Structures are given as C-alpha cells and as structure tokens.
Length: 115
Length: 111
Image (tube, rainbow over all chains, first blue to last red; front, side, top):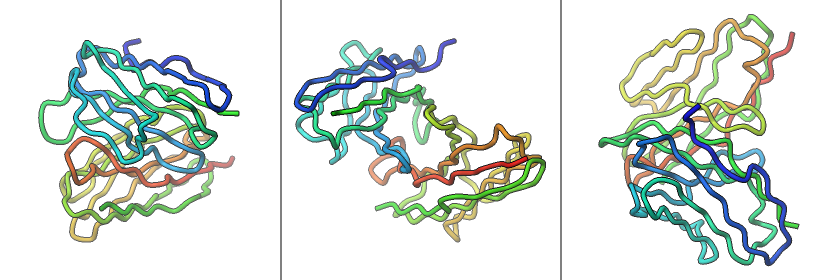
C-alpha cells in the first residue's frame, strides 16, 4: 500500500513535554499538508509544503509548533512545551499538485493526548 | 473568510436514500470537496465539484450550485458501512490548496 502513513498513531505525553510526529506522503506527491482535528469538528489547516518549502502557516500554528520537510519527502511536526489544549488528532495529507485545486489524500493521523 | 454549514447529525435506514446538504460562503470559489470519515480514521476523498450540476459516482452523487452557494451529497442504497461523518470542504481564500472544512455531518444508518 502506498498511501500516506503517519507515526506514531497514538501519543500520550505530560504537559510541558515535547513531541514529534512523522508523516510519509504518497510517493512523488509534491505537496504535504498538516491539519488538526478535535472531536466533533472538521480538520483545521495548520501548514503546508511544496517540496521542501513551507509555503503557508495558519494563525493556529503558535511558536511552539514547527514543521519541516527537509528533503521534500517525509515531514515532521514538533510541538514544544505541550499544553492540554494541544490534545487532538494531527492529520497529514499529500497531493500531486500541478496547478489550481488538487485533491488531498489523508493519512490515518496521530492522536495526541496531553495529560 | 469562509463559512461552511452542514447539519450535525442525520439518521437513515439501510437501503434508503439520504441527502446531506452543505452551504458555503467564500470570497472566491475554487471548487468543493466531499470527504467521508469513519470514527478514528482518516478522511477519504469522495468527490470534487467545480461546475454546476450533478456528478454521479456509483452509489454516491454530488451536486453543486455556485449561484446559491449550495452543495449536497446523495447516498443511495444505504449500507451499514456508510455510517460515518461526511465533511464538506472548500479551498481557503489565500490559495487553491489549503482546505476549510465544515464540522461534518454524522450519518447513522440503522437496520
């Protein structure tokens, strides 16, 4: 299966700790997106990359959040000094952007619980 | 900015037809997506509409009216496995790619 994969699938951490999530997009997809989803809500956009360039960041992405895609393939999302409000499902998606509107394909997500 | 409205919950019976509505307000329109999301799983792409009219894909069809800011997803011959959340999404103003999602419509299919 060559879909989007995310690791870990679940993460439980204590408030104040740092966490890092990894996303492996569909091979050859040049765009990679991060979203956050809480219970009963739709996904909310956080940031996205085209190849290794981070093109846009949402206002939701505080200074404690940082994302990288160093070689234009996999990406990492790090949250420093986690807070209970960071508890959510973190979704990654990728797309084969060639211009205009493209279809995004989502991974299974990483569920973060901050105690 | 974007504003997307969908009903919170719907119920239907196996074998029936259900229509899930979505209304949106955007300053620019670049198409509308429907995704299906089972509990605890990733959203799965169902359809993309950019022109007015109905697009049929098996048991699922999606309709768009740009002048009314309205779309619906039509599910026919409902099956138990169709119980899921259905998300309506439109691209954000700032570009074509980043999506704004509605809160989703939770569909419960009963026997």
